[in-house]
Length: 558
Image (tube, rainbow, N blue to C red; front, side, top):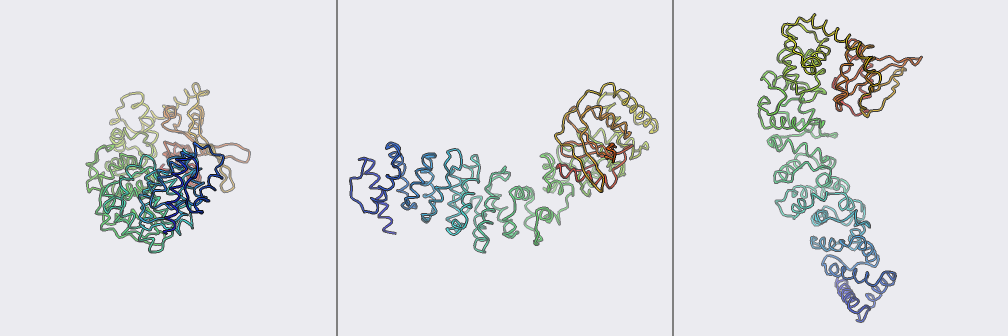
C-alpha cells in the first residue's frame, strides 16, 4: 500500500512538472518515469494544448483518496472518455468522496468504461453514483459481483433513475437511518447474507429506482410500507415484484395501513400479485368489482378515488363524483357484485337499475346497451319505467337505441310512462324501416373512421371465418338489414369515433360471406355482440370473439 501511495505522489509531481515546463525535469522512480513517458508516446498524435487540458483535469482525480494510481490501460481509457465527456473527472472525484473503502483498480476501470463515449448517452449522473456508493458501502454488491457480471453496474449507471428524479433521490441517499430507502438497503443486506444472487439483487434495485413512471412518492410513510412489506414477503418474491405492483400495494397501504399490520399472506411456490392483493381483504369486505379492476389496471382516476374512499372505511354512497346517486340497496348490490369484465362505473349503474327492477338479466341488457355513463340517471329512470310497463329483456337494446335517437339526439319528448309496450315496439319497427329506406340514398359513398385494427381471417373447427371493420355507412345498412337489427343508427357515433363496428362472418366453400355477429367496440372494450334479431352469440361464436379480442388486446364485456 505504501509503495502505491508513494508512486501516486510521484505521478502527481510528474504531472505538475510537465504542466509547468512542457517536459520532465525532475527525478522520480524509473517505474513512474516509464509509465508517464509511455502514455505520452501512445498519445503522440494528441495536440499539446489538448494534453495539458487533460492533465489539469486529471490532477484532482489523483488527489482523491479512494482512487488508486491508474494503470496505463485505465489512463488511456480515461483520456478517451474525457474527450467526449469532460464531466467524468468530476464524477470520479464525487464517487470517491462517497466511498468508505478504496475499491480495486478493476472497479475504477469498469466505472470509466461504463461512462460511455457519447456525451449524450451513458453519462454518470450524481444520483446514480450516490446509489452505487450506498450499495458498495453496505456490502450489497462487492468485487466478486463486478467480476462475475459487469452488466450489474452497467444497469445502475446507465438505466436507473431519470434526470428529473435526481435531486429527490440524491437527497434520500445520504445513508442515515431515517431516509425513505433505508429499509430497502437493510433488506438488500439481509438477502445478500442469505445467499440471494447478485442478479436477483439488481432486479430488486430496479424495482425501487428504475424509471418507468414513478407512481410512488418518496415520503417517510414509504419507509414504513417497505419495512412492513419486507417483513411479510420472501426475498425471492420481492426480487420479481415489478414497480407498478409495488405501487398497487402502496396505494392500498396509504389508504388503509391497518390491512398490512394484520396481514398474513399465504406464501406458496407460485405467489403472484393478484392473490396477494386479495389476501389483504380477508377480513375487510370490498366489492369484487373494485378488486378485479384494481388488479387489472382498468380503473380510471375517478374510480380510484372511489376505491380509496371505501378503503378508508366509508360507505360508497357518500363518495364524490359517482355517475348516479346510490341508494343503500344499490350500494349493497354493488358490494356483492361478482365482477366479471364490467368496469366500476358501469357496475355502479347496473346496481342502481337492478335495485329498482330486481331483474338481473334486464339490468345486464341495459348496461350492455348503455353508451354514455353521463346519462346514467336518465337511463335508470327510463328503463325502470319501461320494465314496470312490461318491456322484456330481449327488447332492451332496440328500445334504448330508439329512445337515444329520438330523445337525446333529436330532442323529441316521449311519454314513455303512459306508452304501451306493443305500441313502443311498433314505433321501433317503423323507425327501422325508415332507416333502411333512407340509408341507401345517403350511404353509398360515405366512409367511417378507421379503428386501426386489421381485418383478420380465422380458421376454426374446419371452417373459415373473418372479423372485419365496417368502414362505410352502406356496410352498416347491409349488416342491419341482413341481421334485422338497428346497427345503422350507430353511424353518428361511428363518425364521432365514439364506437367502431365490426362483423364476425362465415366464409363458406363457395367463398360466400354470411354475417353472424355484429360487434360494437368502445375504447379497448367489446361492449356489444349481437346476432340476428339481437340474439346472443352461440358457444362457437363466443370462442372466436374471445380469441380475436385476446389477440387484439381488447376486453370482452358484452
